Image 1 (cartoon, rainbow, N blue to C red):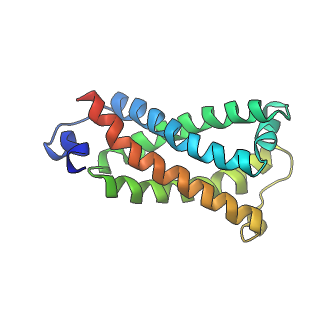
Image 2 (image 1 turned 90 degrees about the vertical axis):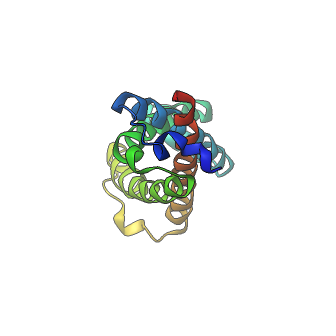
Length: 152
């Protein structure tokens, strides 16, 4: 496992493009896990509402696109700090938490005309969403050094 981040440990720099692409691919891995959880909870039709649909399949596609974009952001913002799996898990959890606040509490409800939902943060649905975002973040953070290893 220690050799998963060998490129970082050996001082090999990664370019912003490698961090961007690596983050997007890692974000797809995290998004797949989170998407399965969302499907089991019946949340994908709500995500589809972002594009004017109520289809679970459309919701999954939208979710995966968002996962890749957010994963790319992880690679750019935190990629240089991820030098081992445990770093990836820690930074990924922090990133997942940040996106829990930004996504379901601020951006998504505002896009859907409901306004920010900060008062709902401790409700059971939002706490379940927090768990999903943490799973996304940790999975993305763990996948990131494995993806980067393929670049070197």
